[in-house]
Image (tube, rainbow, N blue to C red):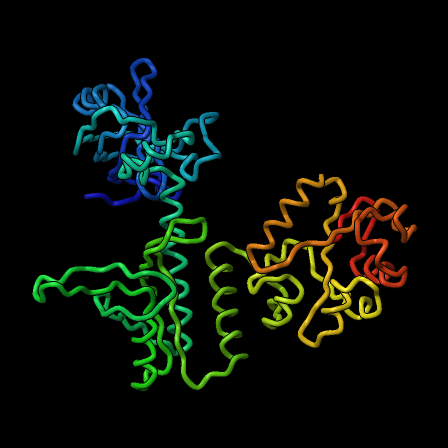
Length: 396
């Protein structure tokens, strides 16, 4: 039916007769000559219809936005001064010889190139929303990323194995989605939260390098980092050490980003142990863009009179640590109190704080806090130096 995608026509096709199919993105009538920008998944092509083809011209007069068209014509260079460098096909156009309306369209509820569409409207007319360029790009990128990772894992000896979707409930981190059985009255299947048991069976069976790009289902409350249905790259290996697995996954991420987005990483990915991540950032998945680090000051607190600090400092299982907030001295007492209540959710007893007004004065003149009078100058100096405190900072 077609010989070329709209967005794939180039100057190499000048002089060729081609057939393209797509949606009428925009129609312009310039006093006897009609221009239609025809759109498909690869891009847009400018089509010219003039009165020399009366049947096609008559049809073109009736074409409106989102009509589905099949057009045959001659590719030619655009007249000088009418080129569009912002379009991949902006140096050429097609002179129509034949036009066929494959499907007419009602007036769409929004323009396909409109970037400010209410999300509910987008979801209501999802089939139109998916025609939009950003959505098309997302779908292509998702496909491209999946293919790159599949190819990478294939070259490293991995076998893609599909595992069952209808299974029995197993202990996981969330509730299961249940599917009633038609054959077994009162019994239910569970949709998998992960293929964990199946991939372990594969390891026992000797499939020592397994992968699957699979759907997982978790019945839990919607949050920014939670989805009831999501896709994951699932891996399992036998006879590979920790360093080998990290190198394999790093290589896959490098390969994917380089081929999909042209992003190159010169250096090896930084690595840290779980213990280091918790000690420095208080999280097993720290955001390395945030430069705030927790520093130990326990050894400086062993001899202070303030038992809240000296107690855990002298306890082998205790820890006294400090966190510097640049510019945090501007926080009000009510804001600090709110943070104090917040940390109690995670089991902390509370928050001690020091506002740094003048870092050169290690006393109640330079440092504003109820605890300063209970700490020695040596202890305060250690806190200031290890946190790198500056005037105007806040230390928790």
